[in-house]
Image (cartoon, rainbow, N blue to C red):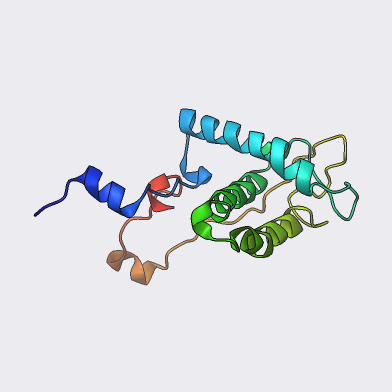
Length: 154
């Protein structure tokens, strides 16, 4: 007996949501809208602490791609670990394994919000890199270089 794709989906459960860096256009905008609601309505009211030079926060966090990526991962983990299927210890696991490490990285004096003040945003310059040049001797044996902007490679 064969199963249809819909039956297989029911048996396996819903697919995991895609990571925000894989989205674009309307999908990205909707995911950002939902993430912003979660950050504003749950994360900051419950876990937000005073902003200092040693614990910075940016009021325009969405303009820091690293912050978007980390907060989205934190939100996805929150959805998973606060689901009743995660069991009674799910929220404790989320606090230990996800919340603490993410907030430590984001609010580090050297993190993505370094330079941002309580009332303002300051863009950070990303490090640069030179293009990698394949040595001449190995060029004949190598496939063409992948497009770094091809989201299917991420």
